[in-house]
Image 1 (cartoon, protein in one colour):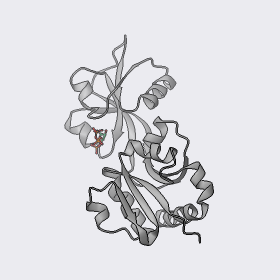
Image 2 (cartoon, protein in one colour):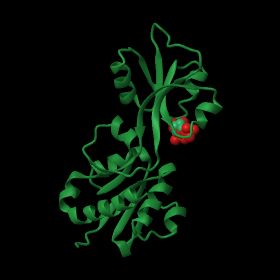
Image 3 (cartoon, helix red, strand yellow):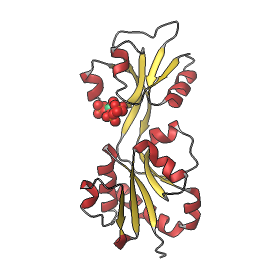
Image 4 (cartoon, helix red, strand yellow):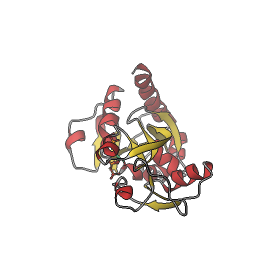
Length: 211
Ligand code: PRP
């Protein structure tokens, strides 16, 4: 098999550990340094692999621009942004879902209901499909704050364990869609490095199917 070098964009934070674990199970020898280092570029010469560690929402940008051949991105990011990348595999890790939540017992303000979210496109199309006109307020984090301090009637956000909603006294009103992490590939790399990428996909698939 060809041994072209491969650059993979990994998401820092929550998904990282599960993604690294999956790669190790698929037989890639990743050094311990991988988990502990603050380095942003990690070379694994024995595997002819290079990893770049990016913010989860930036992984698609690195892959779309071709500075990474492949990457691991949440389906939430894929749904929110239209990117010119191929989604080649559902890694079935970091499972969570997108939901509409708010203060229990409260309705939507009838005049101009406000929805706070990190996902303006997903939220807009969801409420459009429901036939509800809303004003979207884009936030970058701590979305659960918005209904607590009167910024919004509802939020659209990720629910994983449900702990954040619970601890902030919020209720879930609607389930929008399930989310998992995906392996994404740059379209040019997909053609130029097909053997290495096929090998990556096959090795990951056999682990995922066995799980
Ligand atoms: C995410 C999400 C929720 C929380 C859900 O936020 O936006 O706030 O996790 O997880 P849970 O259901 O297990 O409580 P994250 O911690 O990524 O940070 P953020 O608030 O900066 O978006």
